[in-house]
Amino acid sequence: MVALVDAVKSGEIPNSEVAIVISDKPDAPGLEKARTRGIETAVIERRGRTREEHDSEIAAKLKEKGVDLICLAGYMRLLSPPFVREFPDRIINIHPSLLPAFPGLDAQTQAFDHGVKITGCTVHFVNEDLDAGRIILQRAIEVKDGDTAETLAERILEQEHKLYVEAIRKLGVERSRTPPELSHQLFKILKVGLDTSMRGEGISLRDALKRVNYFALQDRFNASDLLPLIHQNPSLIEEWVMYSDDKRTDGGWWLSEDPLFIGNLKSRSEKLFFDSIEQAVAEYVKRELDFWANLNRRLAGGRVPL
Image (cartoon, rainbow, N blue to C red):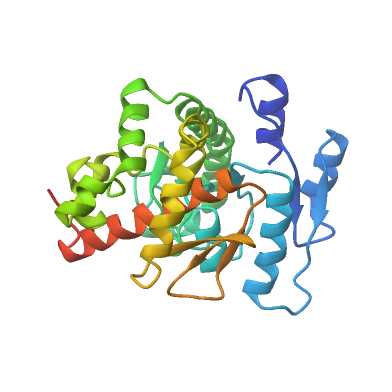
């Protein structure tokens, strides 16, 4: 955590700020280190609550602060599925092994006990499974003849600090630069399946996604990348609200205007509230498209359907 804060303050991670540091332990050393660097902190204790209840309070605080990227540092508890779904492709973690090898606790000791010659560390997105999210960056570290599990862990930790900074810098560059061809494709995605000609042809959203090759773009953008296009084309708001009303029984997500939230049709209790209709539509579109794209993948046996 300290390495990330210092990298932001020095400009090594440009055009960013650390909005808040949150811990579930009041005596966590990182809290005091953050305070001395002028960073706001919060303690959200578990207090015997369920994982979902605890994570819900953390999510509310993160949304209050307008956090775009959540970086886990020494957080040893598995996040609840609703929390992960609330921040898709916005939670990252660093793990002291070359995933998918040696997931879980004591990865350095696992690697040492197995006698591997090369191990390392991995920065990855967090999904609902343990240490199984999409890999962002990795760094290999040789296991030396004189190493113990402890000395190996120390050398991995040195590289973790550097790799985490490098990974966040990489993500920042990717997210701040939307190439013209991607913007063009995103606009096509926003329009796909909505105009009258496609409705007249009886083309479903699932089939329409194939026409714009959504599967090649799915991991290249997040909901915030859609906001400029929605601001420039306000008619898209009405179109997607109408789409939501038409498709409310088909699965996936739906959009409510009053109160303003998006809901999961499979889990009626799962709702995400927003301050603006533009933000709600952007998040709704991304989640709805991902739902149908992932369904296509499952129907195709895990392959990208063409």
